Image 1 (tube, one colour):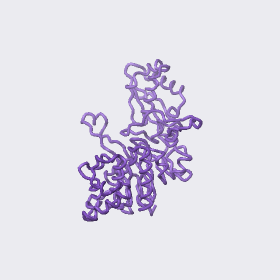
Image 2: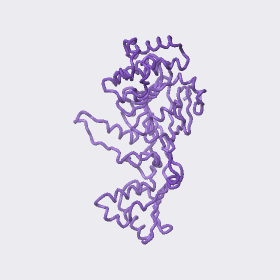
Image 3: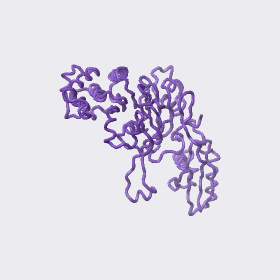
Image 4: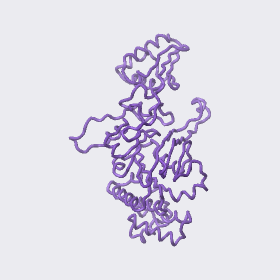
Length: 412
């Protein structure tokens, strides 16, 4: 998109995990949290673009990285046509006036030692856009616009004197006083009561009509995103799995994770409640994310080509060990902790038993179970006095255009 105010291409942000020397040797090198792993999107001027996902999916990291509050590991960030991916702070400073952020916690983002008026006027003074008298006058005007009135009295109050909703209005005023072109809203209404939340959302829309900024609206609340966003991107474990117009996504979600998110929304009318197909298990570890589609270990419609690997087989054995019906039959396979994994391979070395017999037991279990993970197994072999379970490589996973939106799923 040539007219995009913000273009993000293959954005990656990893956070290194500090390990002692012995742990680094055992793990085979340094580890990193894959917070954002190849995210691409663009924002048109004046739109509200929603980034939606559950806690820990990486959406806040995306917001902070595109503003260069965090250094990207890889990828490209272009703001108003300028590549800001690797700009140093002196080069970024002139652009800071045009892009601002509203943080999730208004209590933590306001300096308790500054009055509300000083906090709101401070950006103008920092960027040398006005002297103190002009900054105070502009602060009083924006405070009136956001509903902090009477502005003269509120100007001299400290954050501890304000309610949560008033603090959030102050944070919004502080971001808007520079008249930025891009505003990142990081869960800006998540900590507010429902009645206050609706008024703050109406304020955000009113400021958009008045000044025309572009919003990157980060939230985990699907109802809020539906109310305020023009387009939505659904994130899961560092990846965008579906992106498109909000009306289309809510009316007919395409990705299984998007459907699971919408099915998890409570329905107040008992007559309209239907059967819910929710994801099984927990969100995987972001240090070792699943291969292929990252949602496949929890997906109710997963296929053999989705990215199954050796650790999925070990998890399968562990679940069977925990099941009273199958635990006795699994004792011959030995403790689960004796199995090791390496990518597409699960392996167990045998010292005091016949590896051929163990391979036969594994084949019997595999033949007795129907699941896409089992169907993804390429072979069960005897190798170097042990048993090796080998999986087929996953199919290439790329975003595809489906009915006017991008979906990262092998179903299409």
